Length: 185
Length: 269
Image (cartoon, rainbow over all chains, first blue to last red; front, side, top):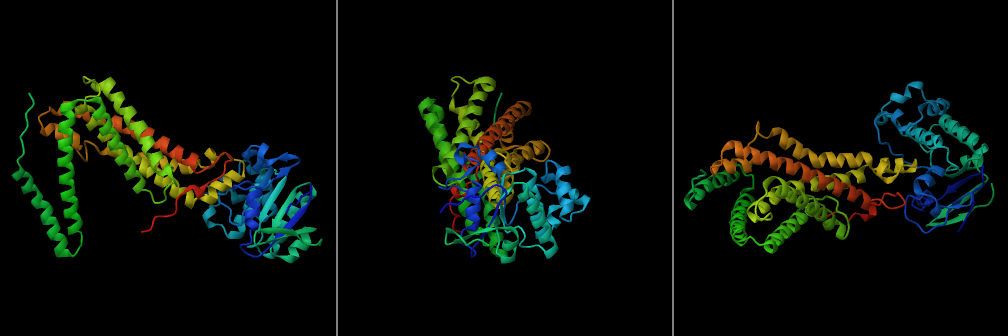
């Protein structure tokens, strides 16, 4: 199975737990060894150094990792991050917040911003709104919709059919490691 | 003039009564360690007696071949020990090869450096100097490398998400594993640092005590001890850095991916 993702397009991915959705995203991000062929704007993945590839293809996992104690330490450019974080409901004091005290929803929103800051051309999202309340979901969707309109291509894993209708025109279904395209929304 | 009081087997038997008393205490308090205590004590006595015979033979031969073989055997045993101290081992030959190779490189390098520059025996490989010196450096190097590798593998398992988060933001494997690497190196070197800090105040090192008991003037014994501590610190540092960086290299790949699949399955307990 092959598929392409156009500039400024969002495709959602659905499938039962354990079907291979996360593996698909990790393979595209080149985090696991795989045989797939992936290219961005004509550049084959194998010809692009891995660190550079991952700046082109951002990935936000369902359980993002944190390597420092406070929020601010995870952003090289805090001023740029703060501008986006404010739109997502974070206070300006968030820079000094300890990561350990954040809720799952707060961590997911921070991880989305952390990935956006490096300005990828493609963003891979693994259920980024699964732990959010309705208002936060709307804020994240609005933020990403703006980026998609500006040209960001997004592959978005979600189980929420309503979210798929709101953000995407195409949908992939993953079952037992196989990927197929669903009918247009 | 150097002189020392020789010990008879009766003296040793008298000292062994202390271990027997401890075994008796274990029985009284139901600690259930009397058996392992006695086995360990007997094992220690047998091992040291055997090594005493081996060293006597080696010292009389002064042969580069036999000295080299003894060194090689010591390093292989130490490599086995490093392997057994890992909660999660590297798979395949890396498990034994990395620790053993790094210990061989660092301990032999540092021992030869000391033999050629500070001690200068004749011949330079004289087993009376080279074997005990290597033994002390190797023992500490083994502890450092075992701790460093164990911290590295367990931390990479526990902090996988954090390491991959940095990879996802475009970090190289060395940058992404940096915090884990630093923790592993700190844990490898901490026993040596603690040992150097406490020496002379809290404890008198065994080698120095042995020299003093065998009649060497304390000031001379102290000089030897300081030399050995420097060599241990250097050897442990070189070995731990090589082993931990080698571990990071093995547990990542050329595409800057974390490869925890290169760890062997956990040992059955």
